Image (tube, rainbow, N blue to C red; front, side, top):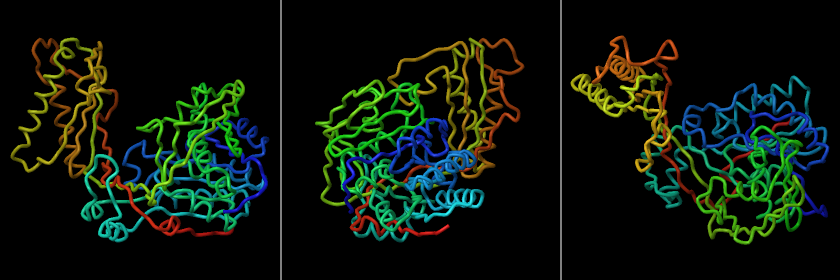
Length: 457
């Protein structure tokens, strides 16, 4: 850890996720405030397991390149570092490599020169298996214990690194730091922690900045925020004059995505918000103080891994027939029975068939206690998942044609029950993944599991 006499650290967060974009005027205003670092989160598990399994980013490559082509030159001109966490959306090797490729294109096109650190967060399966044998892996929440067969089935396994690998890269003189899967606040907090600022406040400020102007009113994931960390507090403010932060909006975002509003866990410990105070400084600025960091006795990182469960085909269709709508639950069950009966002796048994009915608890169907909703028209998503794409196509196609011509009581027209917005009507979605590793892993060295490579451009 290094220390200096600087009384504050300014962190510019351009956008909630790299590739979501930002107004250039907001960014320029941020640079006029003379930040000490530009930091950006590039990913999340929010879009589900597909992207980690497939090795693709859920943000568009051109959009990511646009953001980086503005951020990196501005940082180099100002002589400050750029830190990107969870590269490519999920932070496994393919995601990191794709982002490295984007940066190298920008380097060539703009003639840039800098030192880049690339921090990997994906693990070899043998490493995870050895950790299981040593008893260093435990469930996170209501999930079963991790077994070696789960590791064998996994496509990619990553861990959320803390700020320590970022600090190491900074100490080695990296001007651009690109990291794999990271605890969301750590790319925002690393510089401040390396300079001796309060760890709890640095992480809490990072927790707010990682979503950029989503914290503001009106909220936006594609606009800039500035955080200023002092010795005993920090201040956050949006950089677009149409937005403002309020004590309520900042407090609310501090609880975002957390099961316990007062205790926010992360690598090596947790934030304790019992004594945190949110003070409205001006129409746009909020000051936060009082947050504590409670270290754990041992250092744990969160593992995320996925396995492939099959292939998906889906067909969207709609109905406006009040008679069909009144009987839709019965129709769905009869169609399901017809599909199962048709393929009972064909060897095509291992499939999943679902009907999502939007306009009738399409969002809330997984919660049976939710009151029924009704509409004068329904969107029906027919979904089939099977071991192969061909089998999924077969099941979805048969379910779709069966529902299209199903003869329910009171039906007047025999031409067809469903309206299809697209032709072809069936969408072949490809591989389907699910999380099968969602555990905590104990580590002794906070940097060793996350190897760093350096490149001078």
